[in-house]
Image (tube, rainbow, N blue to C red; front, side, top):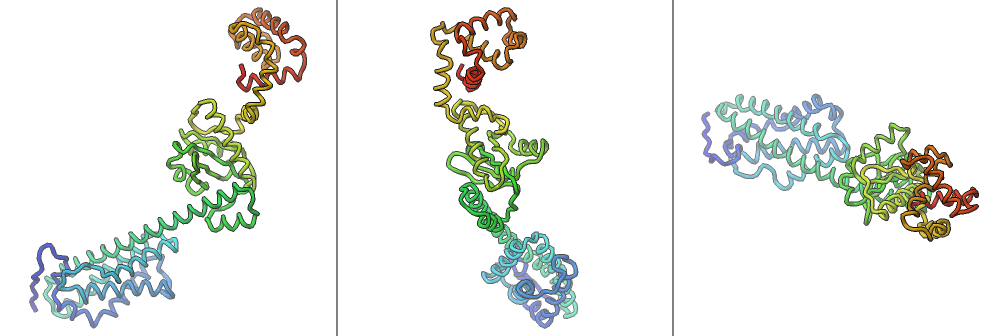
Length: 397
């Protein structure tokens, strides 16, 4: 039997298949379906199990719909590969793979195997039925173009489902972060929310605060290890407390050149305390107009942050303690303040003060003498010396 194609050059390949192809294959359709399903179970490890339940029905339906549409409905037609109903079938398969957590490669491998078996079996039927061998070329092209179309449909649905799942998980993780920061939820509520958000609750955490203009990509950088949520002016990340210098170095590496403050280690039930400390560091930085890049750890700046906790009170104390210097000339006052600060920090060791100030030790002795005249007995009082050093460390110089 000789068969000629009348399809145009820009038509889909199945438009060149004569109706005789459908007539020849129809009696063998059920057998071809079973061969394809058997090959998929044999050659795709993820599907090497009885095709039962919803999963089995979905796979069988996918094979049957594909063969019926391609081999019985489309030959000689210039229609699109998939009908609306057929597209839903392959969207369902793609979404199903995403929901089960399997990689999409298993489904795509099943499609490729199905195409190979379909071509081999339908070609044999065509030969056995005496069809013109020239029909094999458009038949093979039709099978593989059709499989490409349904593969693309499943890939798109798989990606959409993954995006939806990630968005929903991010929403739940953001809600978990806010619940932890509220300090009002009980342990059962927090753990239930953590399970819903697919996040393993560590026993100890640190909070990281990053200004919004530096927070791009923060969620991607921390990945699964952190809860990340953007607020009005900054982003917050909560992650398992790093262990030892190596763990701390890893967090520092992940933060990179972003401006960030890392709060102290706290039990997860006190994550809000770590956040408050990190925010205090950021506030001090903003108040002083500094923009230090990279991770700054609260535990490295505890004294400065304590002093900055109530700047008004520290300012009041500075005015009281430094009042004896008010009557001096500005230049003299600056020299004596500089000397006083160094003398207090080095506990009166003249040589170290001289080295730090780049002056002769006799000059240090002269200036300390002036300080004793100005401050009187206060320099001999431990409490007064402590308060003087405190206000000078706070920047009142």
